[in-house]
Amino acid sequence: MSKPITILGFAGSLRKGSYNKALLRAAMKLTPKNTKLEVFDLEGIPPFNQDLEHRIPERVREFKARIKAADAILIATPEYNYSMPGVLKNAIDWASRPYGDNSFEGKPVALMSASVGLLGGARAQYHLRQSFVFLDMHPLNRPEVIVTFAPQKIDEKGNVTDEEIRKRIKQLLESLVDWAERLETK
Ligand SMILES: Cc1cc2nc3c(=O)[nH]c(=O)nc-3n(C[C@H](O)[C@H](O)[C@H](O)COP(=O)(O)O)c2cc1C
Image 1 (tube, rainbow, N blue to C red):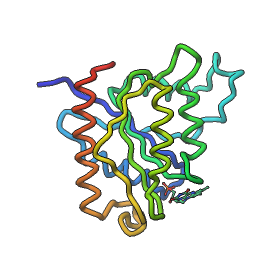
Image 2: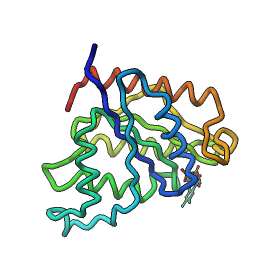
Image 3: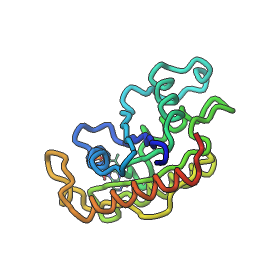
Image 4: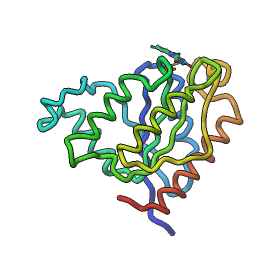
């Protein structure tokens, strides 16, 4: 049997009722065999300040350690003003520093997004893919999980009620595990 895979997931929204956090919760119930999905909450990560990058805040230290320990990364994010939310970009900036200690280096990564609108956060996904180049990450291309009109597919309790979305999340996780096994970076 192949070795167990650990995926670290985080959401680009701090909101309690976040649709994107709901996608991660759904993913936790859909992981392939021999795979663990852990979720890290970006709450408590302060604004990036390069003066502090050699004495990083405890929450950032924890975030970097969890990323390094993971075989693959899963990001679920809304789109804010046609791009990724500041909290997500801020957390990524912290984890990529200091120079020479980019925690994301070589990690496979998959994306999901949900928005209340017509494009489901697609533009945030494409901006993230640009950042993955400089971060030297390996993004999974397919399947794409883009949840449009989220309130129709995720109920008030935060359950993903749309069967098609759950199926895509499952496929995404299977593909991510396969991708991580092919790359074997940890
Ligand atoms: C500051 C801000 C900017 C937003 N910009 C966009 C946008 O560009 N495109 C979009 O589809 N939705 C946009 N939205 C709506 C989000 O899709 C919606 O708030 C969504 O529920 C946020 O994700 P969450 O439920 O995970 O918090 C924006 C929301 C906020 C608060």
